[in-house]
Length: 189
Image (cartoon, rainbow, N blue to C red; front, side, top):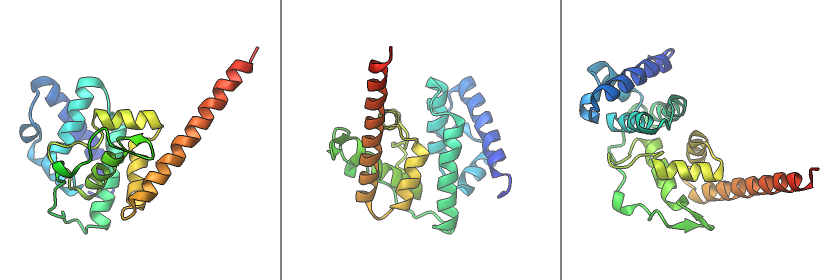
């Protein structure tokens, strides 16, 4: 399961997309036993995978590559940091910051950090998705790939302030690049 697990994941994705498009299953009914076994071995849940498949089938985003990158980060954390054992904890939805909360002037950031930590640790509540529509808008707005952000959260797991500083720095750099590109277009003949 280690060497070719990504091929198994790709096959699972294909089967799930087909089944979803045919029958609009639920997380409980979408996956066969062999799929559930793989989902368990990589530290995910059927609900997490279902959410990605459902959003992909509904709007084309997130795609398989993004799903696989996130699954790889979670799998690595699950096997290396958690020894292949789930923590038994679940993110408290009521403890999540509001969608409109901001830190350093960046809305959604206070909310997405605990969601990313829960994704990393396998502690997402079934009603919460890491990379929901709001998360995707945040990542697009700040030109951050969701897997890149999850790796930053993993690196600074015990220091959310470092994650905030990274996003602030990234956003400032992107704003500077955009301004320079705009100035260059103005100066062009």
